[in-house]
Image 1 (cartoon, rainbow, N blue to C red):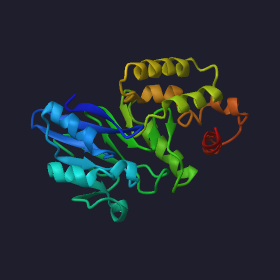
Image 2: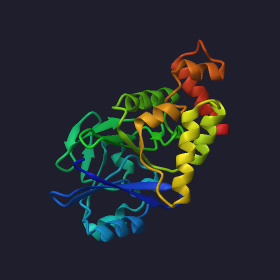
Image 3: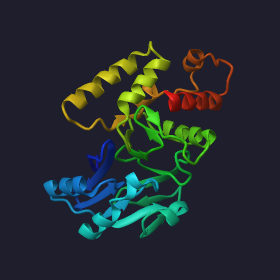
Image 4: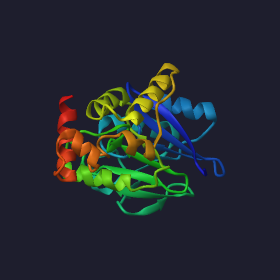
Length: 255
């Protein structure tokens, strides 16, 4: 891989992500929940911080931007559609565009649902996708601004990426998400296996992130809404994929 990934736990259950390019000694941060853990991770490795990229406007993803910019002088990039409610941006990103975030191109993907201006960033050469609160580990974000149709379309875009892609999402809600997944599909052995991996990581104090897209496709009920086995589990064999997704989201909101 051209880029080295470091997962930085922040706040109670947030993740920020550092991507470092050794050749040019440049570092990119995805989302800024909390300054101190990010600065400590940079200092421990002797890395600069050149660029902060924001997935969406919620405080627990942007609130550390001012402190980090004061400490490092980093540029800040985010979605053009959300520029009015993000910290001041040095570059506005357009969904569908491919830009040089370092020397490696990253693709900006429009993923509304959790918020209407949400973006994800895919680095195909290194095999990473940063999904914020759209596709989450074993789940998806609540629909605070967007519609079920928007979120289903967003998840479908992400599900179409190569299965070996490492999914880096914004929170560790894995215990609750996997409990819900097992509730819907109690016979799914992949969910049981993943829950065991998560328990081990938590015991060892290691960040439970990232996961391959293949693991998400096998265990994440929101990505599985179109499968006959999920429709059968819900008694919705003849329903559309969107209707099944909408039902799963409604059940998770009350779980």
